[in-house]
Length: 292
Image (tube, rainbow, N blue to C red):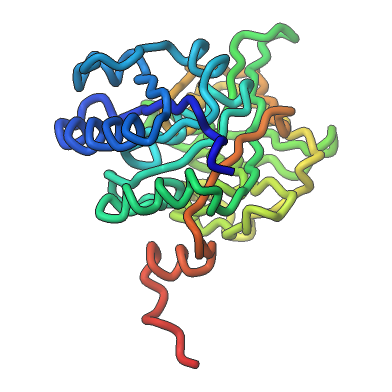
């Protein structure tokens, strides 16, 4: 396994000055071990290329065997969408707040990466969502989401009405602030704050979570990941659709948001000893060390 990951891309949170030192430390560490280091172009512009190769995401996808992301979950989400079609494995070094996906601690960075170069890691697949907005039967917008797709009331100070269907069958007409459609990866993000279910990454499901529904009987529901979810924005209300909290589209009354599992997935590489449940205990402060 020592010959694996010969070309490694480094991607950092662009607007964080703290990233530069750790990123360049990691670049030097990898170079000393005979790896080709490639800096993502916006990252290089922020921290300086220091003689390393610089590439955009398309070139990274064609060239890199591994991408290491330094930052928080937001940086990982953006990177995952950019590289999903190339299936480049991703590793996250946490320099954000929670770090559900960037699970290597900064003070353990070099040791964890060295173990990974030696083939000691846990491989995990996560699926993405294809999302599109249809207007009069025509596609107005399309993108990918790893965490969630959210339709909400935008700038208006009142509820909107949504026609929610799964595989063409009406689930409900929802009067609410909006609706979250979440992958298992996103179930610990915005959906969790809206009382949605936590889905283990191995669960082949998509969560549909109402946002502040007018009827208290409107509850979250998890459907098969083979389902197609259509959300119609009922007149007279316009709305706004958000993708991983990073992209958005202003929708009009009559538009339909269509969401389904994408053919693209990402591969996350975790350090030795990684446990999803241990991560939840730590990040969500559920309990102290379990008793034996």
